[in-house]
Amino acid sequence: MLPLAGRRIVLTRPAGQNEALAARIAALGGEAILYPVMQIRDVDDPEPLARATAELDRYDLAVFISPNAVERALDYILARRAWPEGLTAATVGQGSATALRERGIARVIAPEARFDSEHLLALLPERMDGQRVVIFRGQDGRPLLGDTLRQRGAEVHYVPCYVRERPPGGDEALGGAPVDAFVVTSSEGLRNLFEMLGPAGRRSLREARVVVTHARIAEQARALGLERVSLTSPGDAGILSALTGFWDKVEGGSD
Image (cartoon, rainbow, N blue to C red):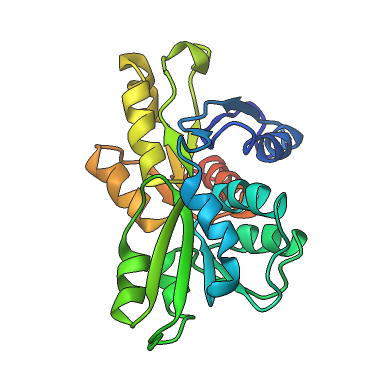
């Protein structure tokens, strides 16, 4: 029997980011339900991005805070100019690092294991006096990275290149049948999920396994009263390992 046979698994990444994982779940016998809990759109005011594009040569480091930042910022930048040969890029995840290299950016700094701002900061110099850093990110975001780089002496410029919004929700998208697992990859996404689901959906959420990809999301899940929380590494391979490993244990008689 395939390891995910009969399992219904809700995927909550933004639209367009779930399909590869959904196909792998289907290949293992499971049913993937696409339930995006964030919508990504362009910023209302592109002027900061236009200004950063024109001034890229003046920066010492360009940080892309997420896959959406890589896609939105580089779509805009590379349509207007070449990436400066001497400009190093940095990002918090290996998926984003790969996307940067595929766009022709050779010099990329990214953590190898834990994918967050804290572990990226550990790879950057303790003193960055006089260095100019541009951070491409969503309309809002955690201030930790920029605040820490300023404390190290850097001049930091935030450039919003996309907006995250909560889509309309409802329980009907879950199809009415029991859900075995929800996969959640951001704290904001978990908050949105909780708000989007009605009473029946929240009951399914409490009864299902909730697979998360960072300790912060796990803490928030437990604060929301979710008890069946599994923490795994980011990326599709880690998520699939958690899902199949969990049900292997269940079938073996333990939870």
